[in-house]
Image (cartoon, rainbow, N blue to C red; front, side):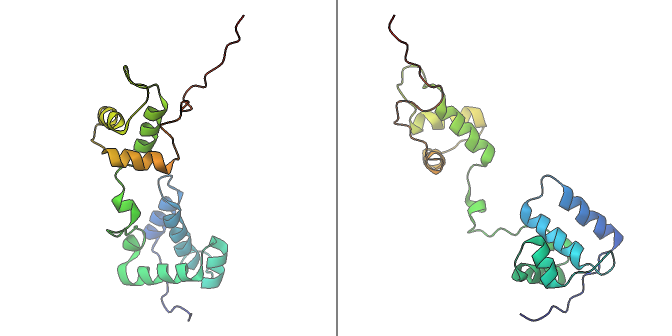
Length: 168
């Protein structure tokens, strides 16, 4: 790969924005890496790294650095620091987030409803509609449980271990 010809010059306002975004807890690792790349390659503030040094210090490939630079040159800083999820990506197709998955698993690990020996997907769908305030299909619940390798047919679901009491 050739050397990049784009020079990254951040204004003081942009520098504050990038540093704030890098330190925010809600920022994902991908965007933190991009922020650090822009800080390392900025010619106006501090020391400037080469692309190879930047890639090595941030633990990313050289292609990632070149892609971030190209994105900055064509779209600007704000667009370069956003995730562009395509329609076909797994994150855009997800029906439930991590919080909802945790609640579904918590429900499935709990005791079965009155009159039932175990949870069924239909029962979990009905109960999760109440808990999550949004309808979740049986197939989505099945995928969540399959992903976590949760067996609904096991006698002990792991909610509360059963103790065998000795006959005395």
